[in-house]
Length: 282
Ligand code: GUN
Figure 1 (cartoon, rainbow, N blue to C red):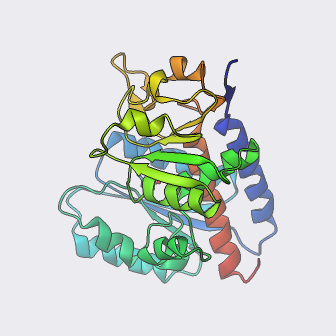
Figure 2 (cartoon, rainbow, N blue to C red):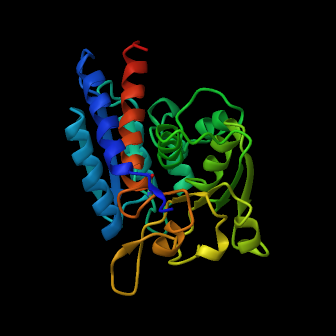
């Protein structure tokens, strides 16, 4: 039986509409500041999309496009000035930063209450111990996809490939919070295929074309593809060999149109949440 296509694009439209309606009830527009340093073309595309999403949701947005010669202290001063602004609820520094800039120090400088990416150690720590905080957008978006399609991780074998701070680690924690039995795989994992074959829910977040092939997937598994790669013809694709895996999975996210739109929708949800908190609304 063909797999259900987990339509992140359609779900993101619904989420953003919900955010737009909730934002309209506030006494002022939620404010999002996005900082991009350097001229990485992929980062530029992402930042443009985030601005469009913000406009769709009725947010006030500011973009700071800085040259790759920007010094660490200049970048941190900008973050600090945005921390102090009453009209800015969320601050996002697009990653990766050009070499020479200390990503960790910059992320630490963002006020945790405005950290709509959920990358500040305080928010990461809150996620680890199951306390309220901002959750990184990609794994949070994946959890919304699972919920929308009635896929409950409880008691399931969940395998996450990739251990990044942005996706792999928070993904594992969210699946664990929902009572999944979670394994995190990475570049040093021995017999990746064998581990993946145990998964009821398999999340691939590596950035390697055709990393996950049909022989690595248990029949009926749910397959979530986080990556955004280009194949040899220049077409967008994920980590999963989509056509062959879709024949044996019960559900699968397409690339594009799966996880990506939900990552952006969650940024809007987090910014709305930040604004509601700043304005004393829950
Ligand atoms: N670069 C790739 N993904 C992300 C993300 O979710 N947030 C930020 N700030 N940078 C990224």
